[in-house]
Every structure is written in structure tokens, then in C-alpha cells.
Image (cartoon, rainbow, N blue to C red; front, side):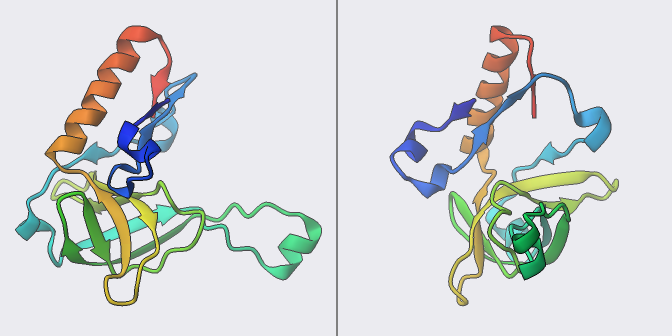
Length: 154
């Protein structure tokens, strides 16, 4: 597991990590490319957030059932900062860590960020942006993980 040291100091601009797995799950789940886009390309862009919200019905809670429904919602990016993007997408607790993505012109999933939190009604929800700095950090972690062990990284 790789975690940015700034996040350990509670800096949400770096709220992302890399986790090693025992096997390559991409052949089952598919892959997504990490994309760096400029501020103007991001502003107003329609993106999706897909994840497993922690919402449960009263019956689920009483019976102790797990909720295994994946949701996808989409909406526009409202504001762009160096390390964060804000968007008007309905999300719920439990979806943190979900990719913020769109389909490129070839129909492939391109991930622009990582959903981290709900926000105010003015700014929308927020995610860590895949900017050049964060992409370099993730690339470095991938290189380190591939040279230190034979675990697959997702």
C-alpha cells in the first residue's frame, strides 16, 4: 500500500492511495486510463462516478444484509482547482475512492480523478484531480511496486 505523506497529515488534496493485489483483476473488471486534462478541458465536462454507496434500507440493517448494488451517476464539473475538481453528481457515503471518469472518443474509460467527499450545494461534491503531479506520484508508486514484489496493482 502506498499513501501520500501529505494525506497522513490530513491534506485532502492528496487523498489517494495505491493498493497491491494478489492477482491481476483487470481481466475480470476491465481497465481505465488515467488522464490529465487542462482546466479549460475540465470545466463543464460531463463525468461519471461509479461506486458502492453505503446506503441501506431499514430491512437491510435489521437483517444484517450487505448491499451489493453499484451505482453510476453523472453530471458536469463545476469548478477546477490545482488538486481538486468539484461536480454536480449525487453521491453517497461509501463511494469514496470511486473513479471520476468519462468515455473517450474510442469508447474507453478515462479516469480524471478520485471521488473523496460530499461538499456544499454551491461547489458540489469533490474529488482529487489527476494532474501532472499526481500522475507522476502514481506512476512512481507503480514502478516501485513492480520492482519490489510480484503482486498486481489495482
